[in-house]
Image (tube, rainbow, N blue to C red; front, side, top):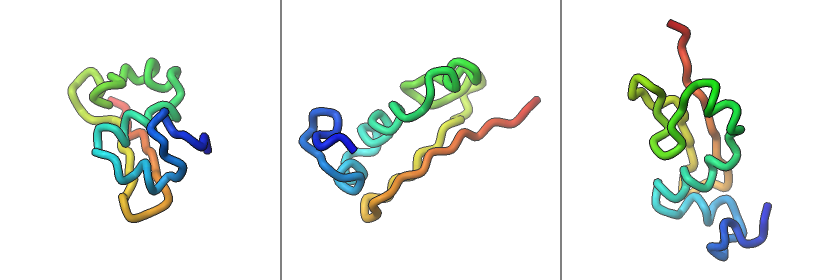
Amino acid sequence: MDARAGGLGLSSIQEINHLPREMVEAHYLHLVPEQMLDRFAIDPRTLKGPKGTRLVRITAPADKPWRRGALVHRRP
């Protein structure tokens, strides 16, 4: 992991997870391939699809040294 995550002086996943929710999601969004955002028309600011449904879920508990990302998509 980059020793200075996002220029914030953070050096662990758990330190990132302690940030405000919006900052946590913005940081981890960089791990989502841009092609996936494009393919499912996901807005990178809201993580919602064209119908307004949140399609990306990022789980990053402040008291844990891990994070999980998931794409939730159902075919019409």
